[in-house]
Image (cartoon, helix red, strand yellow):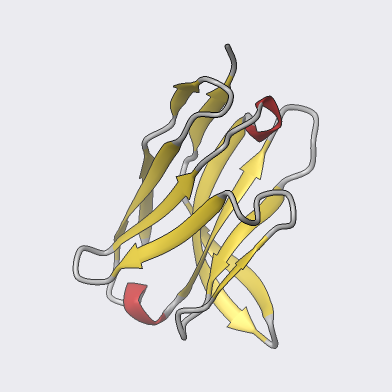
Length: 120
């Protein structure tokens, strides 16, 4: 069974940075596609970054150039480095593990989420 546990969220000032971490269990980590979703109150869930099994990354337009997703296969860890944060980035961020299917990401497992609040 796959378990995903996020950490690293909190209160950040506008323009600041934060790195989210996702600890994973399960032997499929190194060959799976992984993604970070976020959901702000009253808004639809948004896929902000995907890391494909081949190692390429795709980002939502809203975060491109500011967020960087990476993984450490040896530690079974996934990261999301978030820079130049704005209040619009305030949301609960979820780590997911899933499938990369015909250039589309299909999440199968979800973490419980970590809150990121960008405010002065």
